[in-house]
Every structure is written in structure tokens, then in C-alpha cells.
Amino acid sequence: MIKLSNDNWEVDQLVKTGLYPHQQAVFRDALRALYTVKPQIKLKLIAFAYSNGEISLGRAAEILGVSQEEVKEILWETGISLHFGPETTAELQKDIDNAK
Image (cartoon, rainbow, N blue to C red; front, side, top):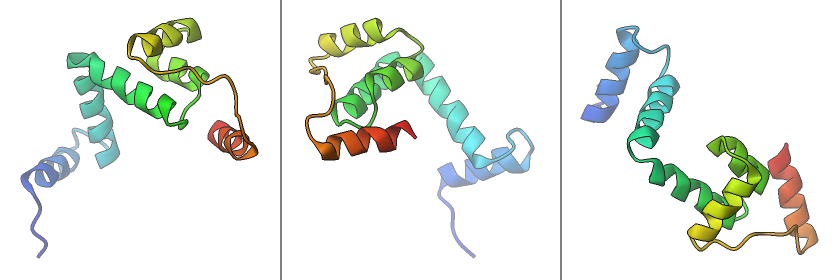
């Protein structure tokens, strides 16, 4: 028998009792609660993903539910430089792949 950690056991029990349809719903709800209690965590997550080129300015705005201008202000306040388009063909391809 596989021994589950307490966290995994709790998640499994939430699904088994029918309170959640599947584990992903538990994690989604937990993240939503975390972001409500600590909104700065979500902002840092988005700023980090943007600074690494994982998401675009538009995607960051969509995730945060704000305008692109507001995202620019958030990024500026956190010391993140704005990207003004791909500088290489590899960066362009990454942008295209992220847009899919």
C-alpha cells in the first residue's frame, strides 16, 4: 500500500466525499483562496513569468483581470523591465508558441 502524505490524503478525501469533482479543482480553489488572502503572491508570480518571457503583457493583464497599462505600472513598481517585442527569431518563436 502506498503511504500518502497528510496533504495528499486530505486532497483525496475532499474528492472522495464529493466536495470537489477532482484534485485539480481542489488545487484551483486553494490557489484562489491563497491569492485572495495574499494578492502580492499572484502579482509576484505574474511579474516573474513576464520577466522570464513565459507570458506576454496581454496575458499578464488577462490573468490579473486588469488593463495592459495597469500591468505596466505593476511591473514598473516591482522593478521589472518591459519587453518591447522579440529581439531574436528564437524569442519570436517563443512568443508564437506561448500565444497558442
